[in-house]
Image (cartoon, rainbow, N blue to C red; front, top):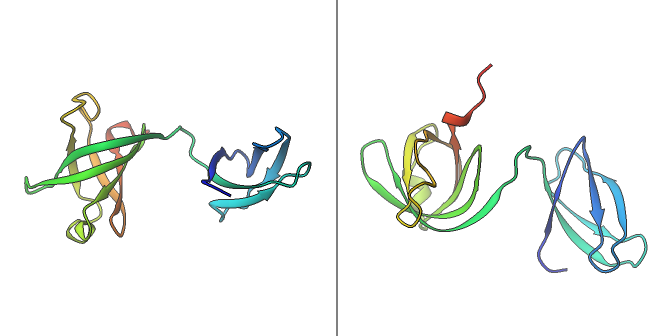
Length: 142
């Protein structure tokens, strides 16, 4: 079993497709599980499935960016993924400790100036050095 393959979850089910033999099968995805090891019902091969419950697709993005904190201090981060709803970044080791939830930050990227243009971003989660930032300018208002 190598890396996990992402599968889209809809109505707590996902369509599994074996990479060895191509067999397809609809399987249940319990609400509290983020990954699952599945054995193919035809060839018996194991696959690690990463269960994605997001409505919009996440695009993996690698590169350096600058996060501008509320006081104006610039903070370098590594991009992990970008979606319509936000951004996932990694800070330097120990860098997550100097941030607070619900801070409004700005992001800029020297190699792609349009990547974070005209967006309002709020820190929503900090797990060690992994930081989840929500794009509140794209949030749906009811």
